[in-house]
Image (cartoon, rainbow, N blue to C red; front, side, top):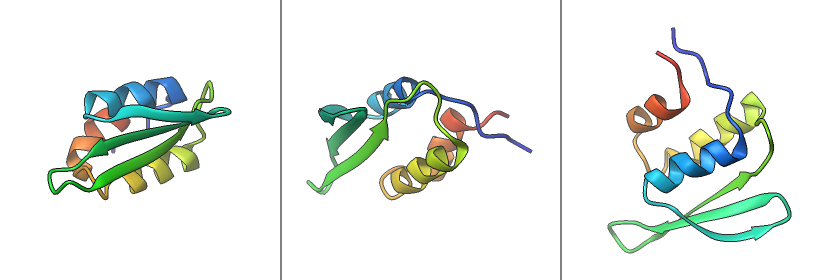
Length: 81
């Protein structure tokens, strides 16, 4: 069974930048990423820039991102084989 990787906020931001998101703004330790979807809709994710993200936080980010990106594409970045 695959396990959730231990990632930092910076790691997660780089993953989403590779998926087409760009850093839109930052307030404190929270970075807002944005991209425009194929239908012209704005897709926004907020990532805390902590040294290591809690598993619950990481799962919430994955759940939020799954509205825009297929879960199979997300799994290869966030879970071990």
